[in-house]
Image (cartoon, rainbow, N blue to C red; front, side, top):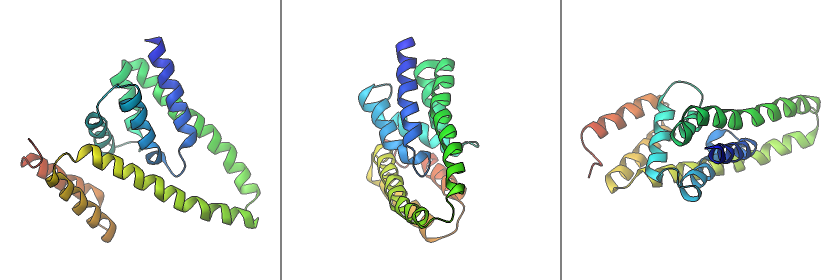
Length: 176
């Protein structure tokens, strides 16, 4: 159990420091670690846990806590949560003070502009990974594409899209 907790701490502390643009940007690496390298769960289980975490109220990265629970129970919850949220919180506090100090410098605007495409790319990679793991039938891929299109082109609240997805699931679409 101790070796598993140490592995969880090392993985999520590293991911914590790599999460540029938000927690969703580290989903591909998180999945690679817990599914492909450590085999703690399947890709389908990972995507289901991610969906559950996104539907639940609370922080965006509740999937971290769920992974900790799945892998090592309450000790896993504590270790993954502290490892994921601790280092990035400390680093963010330090960087924010420096960022304010240099608010009038031209390089700051250039750095911000450079981070935008990187963040968009990381979020897109995360979306592709979750879609690939969750859509195991063409009908589910169509639903995912339709939801993505509606989300991008309208201002409809995401909860309506989640409700539509739940209704589709209740109807039996994608079950086989």
